[in-house]
Image 1 (cartoon, rainbow, N blue to C red):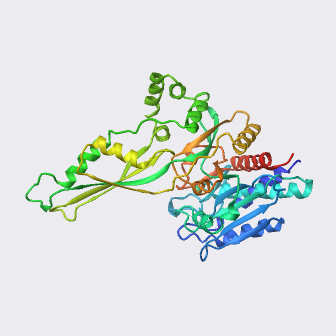
Image 2 (cartoon, rainbow, N blue to C red):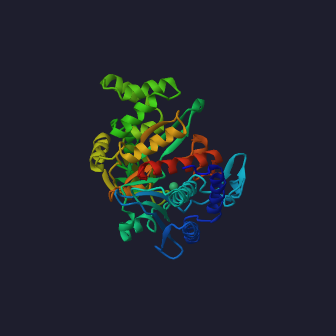
Amino acid sequence: MAADWKSIEAETVAQLQTLIRFDTTNPPGNELELAEHLVRTLEAEGIATTLLSPAPDRAAVIARIRGNGSKRAVMLMAHMDVVGVEREKWTYDPFGGVVQGGYLYGRGAIDDKGMLAANLMAMLVLKRAVVETGLQLDRDVIFLATADEETGGLYGIKWLVENHRDLLDAEFAINEGGRTRIIEGGKRYLAIQTAEKVSYMVTISARGPAGHAAIPLDGNAIFRLARALAKLADYREPVTLTTTTRRFFGLLSRMWPVAEEATAMADLVSDEPGRSERGANVLSRIPVFNAVMRNGISPTKIAGGIAGNVIPAEASAAINVRTIPGFEIADVVARMQEYIGDPELSFLFAAHTDAAPGSDPDSAMFNAIAESANELDPEMTVVPYLSTGGTDSAHLRRIGVNCYGILPFPMQQSDEERMHGHDERVPVESLHFGVRLIYESILRVASSA
Ligand SMILES: [Zn+2]
């Protein structure tokens, strides 16, 4: 079946521009009008679509192309809301969808309206193939657009899981959360997110005698807390590799452009303990690699004191701890406690995101994405990836959907860093690559042929 990709490309650009022009800055979100546009677009092509309403002006869209039901469904998901903008720092209107110099600019161009547009186009092209060429599908293909991802999903994925779980039943889902990275020398890799770290807030509190600052007191709570934090600064959780991260480093080592780091990656995944340790030491110096190798500990807030001349009775620090799936936060906190070695401190912790199992990096869906990527770009290395940040996928993994996070647009890190920043933009060619990647992946995993 030969889809007319040239005209689809023009349609994709126009779609993404339209999506960007709906201002869905969250808060407040106001995704309803964008959702209605999606419903109109999908229904115009004969795709059965449902508009759900979690709250006034909020929305979720679920559309479905039916298969013969011999396999469980596959889902394409993206969120409709975007984070706010500092307008004066943008070169182009953040809600204008301007195309300039090979880039499409706008808030959401890469997070997550680019993917929303790519998912939408994949649905439309798929439906046309069903209608025009009699393409048969083994499974339903579901399109899901959610609200409220950027502020936690209360009116988005959480609401859907609680109220419409039946509509979300799928074996696989493709979501945001991965990377398609262009690195030094133009080499490319696609990191498919199969698992994400779990985020906890740990509060360390120190108590001490309160009094007038004119009379210095031993056991001052602020000094005590400061000593604890200074100690903690030297602490690192042990290196732990999972199936995903072992494969991530092993595969990247074969294509990584920086020789020292490539060697370190190969060393890390070797079975020789000394060598593995050497590799870990080198990679620990690179923050992003360090973060995927071990549970992360980052102090984020500090509080204590009420006046400049009063010694407070208490001082506390908030520590964001992100664990690799499979770790118990209580064990991590116990190790922190032991390392700091002050039995008078109190440690409290609470989950910030929910723990979820990882998705199978050997599934038909993972392989379909990898094969499609290599068909489009034979030089692209495909690796499974543990993300240090959280996405909506955690909620679906908890109810048995194997989610795969991709950001299907080949980009350099500098462009990717515009996500949530100024002049967010997607290379137009990369946008087209993303549509093809999603479409071909769905075709591979869902078509009966
Ligand atoms: Zn996002």
